[in-house]
Length: 314
Image (tube, rainbow, N blue to C red; front, side):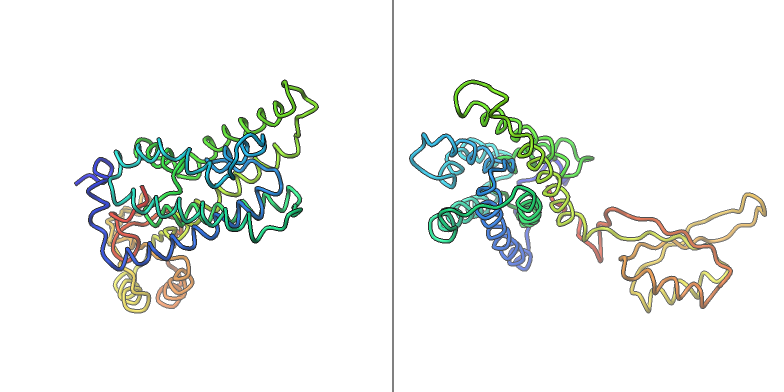
């Protein structure tokens, strides 16, 4: 089965232990999202992107009788329908839980936890809110859910453009929402006027988006990052055996030939986690101080011992 073409079928094959892990990630995501929005983005006047950014922009016009949590729920209806068509009903259930949980918690925080005259400077709000929202987005996507809205749009786009990381899509989508929020702020007092334009808020909102994108990517892809090492040595058997036994990492033999000497020899190739690299260097140094070792970064390693192929975030 091609996981890119069958997202609905992929969602049906989730083991129970993975579902429990998803549940834990979902709780973390809901709390971080609500706290980041209510304590950082909302009081600072920043437009964080996403449907919450649109909701906060509309809320500032004071013509709606309810808060941003309810606005987010209303705006989510059409995009949730799109999500069901693309990812199925299990995705719908987890996404509804995330939306209701985050919206409800935002309403509770706004009404009972956030002080009446509470405010925060834009810079700490951009940094703190960006970190919290970024982590929450990464967690909710790893939990095979979304907060609805632009999260669903990003997931659909990523099915089409697999070569782009999720955080990159958020930069474009949330950037457009920030522009929308800026224009609305200029219209808020009637008519477009540069007097209503706040470059500081725009700049800090952009900073928040980049921070959010970075931490979302870190949660989604950071744990998959590894080191790929190539070892040219005359002690390939000894080194590969020790890497297998001591580091519990597999080793692959590649056939190589020296361009100058024209001697055939086996090259060791091994993918390992970053924390295993010092151990590998020690083994190579002890077995063959004259060995030639190349270390590169692998942004993602999927398969046995790492994130499985069917767990890759869609």
